[in-house]
Image 1 (cartoon, rainbow, N blue to C red):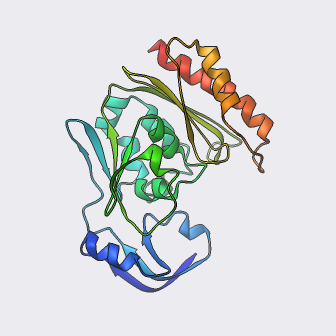
Image 2: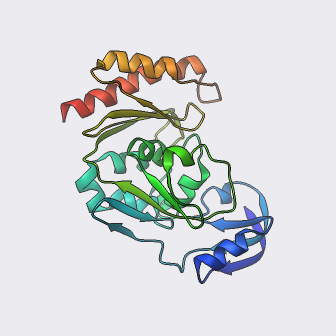
Image 3: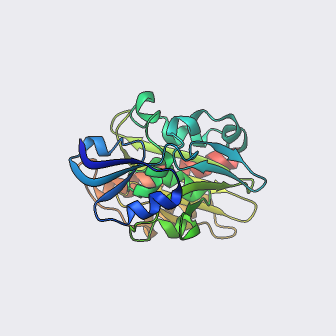
Length: 254
């Protein structure tokens, strides 16, 4: 549950940005996670009237407005036609359809949660975010930036001929992942993103000519893992070898 003293439906991004500079102001996404906690905010800023709920295809990328829901990306025919089933796969385990009809991609990416499925996949796809003031920022850089008062406007998925696979292990069907892995191949390189370590997703780049098993071992040996109630660090390191190999072989078979 959350409570607010002021609720403002922003009429422009400039208005939303100015409101967000005030202490304890919060930009609202789908409010999925806000509803699960207890938070008091001075001003709740609603972006729903700014036309940010559309997915558009450009020559070089797909643009996902910040208010696009996870269900929209799960069922979008253009995304499925270009990227295959990895987009739908990365969100289909998130709670349920009703939840995914509310939760936004902007909130999911802005939060930079370690357990985030979209963050892990989008990192492997070479995604970018568009911030109102800072402009276009590579997601690989954005995940490590400190939280500030800027506003995420759009997420861009570049069209680079990607072949990607997304795999997870979960204790139950709709739980947070114990470990999440995305492997993506382009004409230039192959990368692996590993999330729910439980730290934020991190990238490992496959070296030229590197065998699959060597790549698998390097991912597991290079990345750090920690323990929480869903699994130990040792268990996650073991899962990393299993899931990276599974995803890497999946894209080689395509």
